[in-house]
Structure formats: C-alpha cells, structure tokens
Length: 175
Image (cartoon, rainbow, N blue to C red; front, side, top):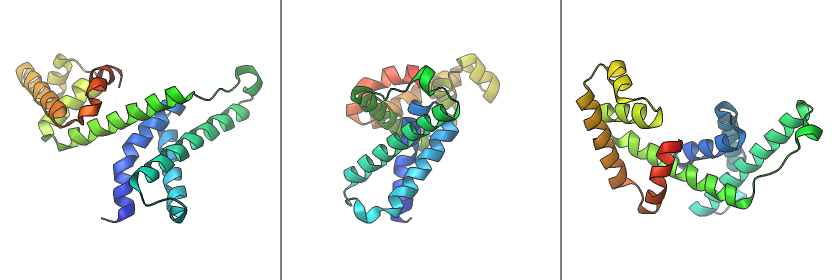
C-alpha cells in the first residue's frame, strides 16, 4: 500500500465525521474531505512529514473547506443578511475533533470484530435498533443478540485507546 493510500485510510472516516458535524450533510462532508486530501497531495512539500503536522493540516483544510461551503450556501440562498454566519468557537472545534477521533477509533475496532458480532454491534449501537429489531432483521435469537453486543462492547473497551474511555459512554448515546 502506498503512503498516500495509508494516510487516506487512516484519517478519512474521522475527517468525514468532523466535516459532517460542521456541515450536517454526509455527502457534502465526504466531498470536502476528498478535496482536502487532494489539496494536501498537491502541496505535500509545504507540509512537514511529521504525522501530527499532516493530521493538523488535514483538519484545518477540512474545517476551512466546511466554512467556505457554508458561506457559499448562504450566499446562494440569499440568507446572508437574515441568518448571519458565526464560526464555531475554538472549544466547540476541539470537541468536534475529539469526537471525530473517538468515532474513528470505534470504527477501526468494529472492523476487527468477527462479522456476526460486527453486524449486531453496528445495528444495536450505531443504528440504534432494539434487540428485538435486530433479531427480526438478522433472524437470530435475542440471547445471541445480547451475547454479541456484550462481546462487541468488551472488545471495544479492551482495544479502545484509554484516553478515549471517558468519552465512550457519551458518544455511544449520541453517535
């Protein structure tokens, strides 16, 4: 795998979630993130090879792309004078970044789970289906659903970066 592909796969989901939290539209968020990667790949010589510098560049590029998109939409819809535009303050941006990082970490861990556990975990925790709805959709018993959810949660808590643990309960309720 090339360096660019690894970089893309490492940061894409987290950046998409970060952009989605700002613009509120997943398709637009994905486009903005892809545009930010293209901008980075065109300007790699201007950014340090340090992973943190690259990550900061990408988050900044996505943030500014989101703001530009919002501004453009407001102008296009002629709501500029009525609605006004306020950029998020730094605390909200930092919280969005942390939230996106935790979500990205959760998705990485879910991808490592066995397929049956992955399905039940996604339906139960990410899509918010009840145990009964999961049993009907997957044609499995309620006990199997409960077992797979517990198994998935144990895997998640075991593999999740310890600095993210305080956020896990809050985020699973608000994904």
